[in-house]
Length: 427
Image 1 (spheres, rainbow, N blue to C red):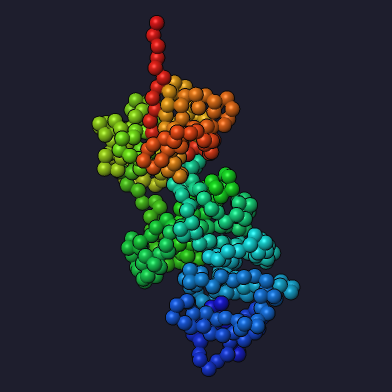
Image 2 (image 1 turned 90 degrees about the vertical axis):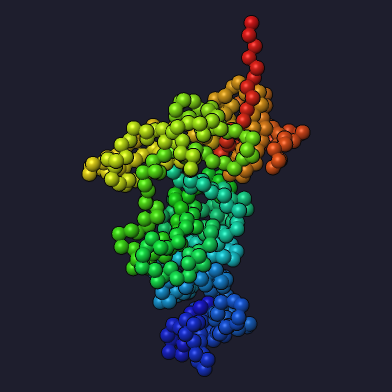
């Protein structure tokens, strides 16, 4: 713990202690020890014979990661103690009728649910932030409603059972380092544009296959979460402008940019030719392609950009193509709903249904980067049996000699990289 009580029952942070004074646990009342070493964050600790865990029952995270997060909030909001009948617990942070819990170390499903129920009985909302740095979570923008599509190879198992519809509990995963490591002086910056803001947090918004495949409604910044409760002076009228600042150059459609060997092609939808199986290696020859960022300008070729003074909102589909625009044109606000386009990524079943003249083809799972090779026969059997059998491919592009069962064929994460058509016979 980082806050204890002095002899006058006043809350004292570990950074403000005095050597000669005694300090006591705010939950059990036992005297605690000041730990101020050179390695771990300074903290209070119970003596070895303490029975506090027996009276509390919860295990509190004592990691440096936890301390750094907690320390971004005012001391008076840290480690606030609550009591219901004979149960007494402390929240990592309590602010604006919201409990914020930071979790770095393992926690059981029983304790997770117990904490939620305890604070919900008090009428408070609970926000959980889990340390997911280096936890093999892949993610990209492109789900329905332009959500973030995520997959987690080795998730915290009990989170597979969370109720995403519970408005009282929000669960966030920190996937990249915090702003206080990237920019330690972030609190003292006056100009919002000077902040180094990154989308380093995702929210568990919808479970598709537990946490093996889930979605987040958006990317978040740690700065954004902290500012929600502790507003910064540098905000002015540019709050979260890093999400909304778009220029006319962004009125383009993304061309799927997947890291493949140069000899590979891949196929998607070309609005110029209105062809779903257009080979994107030919895009460089098209006058509507911005080769600096590999985005297609064709659908916006007639937009008189000199008449557009501001882009108020843009929504994209899961492959990064524009589906909605809100613009200020000649001083008037106008909304445009654009025709939805066929997705680049599909299920293997969709490819089998749409392209029935394939002799052999290779597909890449854009979440995992794994490639598989399927024949026309394999695809026809998939249509018939709803089971996919094919060859696995190595990172060097070689297909295995044996065939294996291919999983996740029913997930829209497959990109067609190349195919050979069946030879057409003529009479």
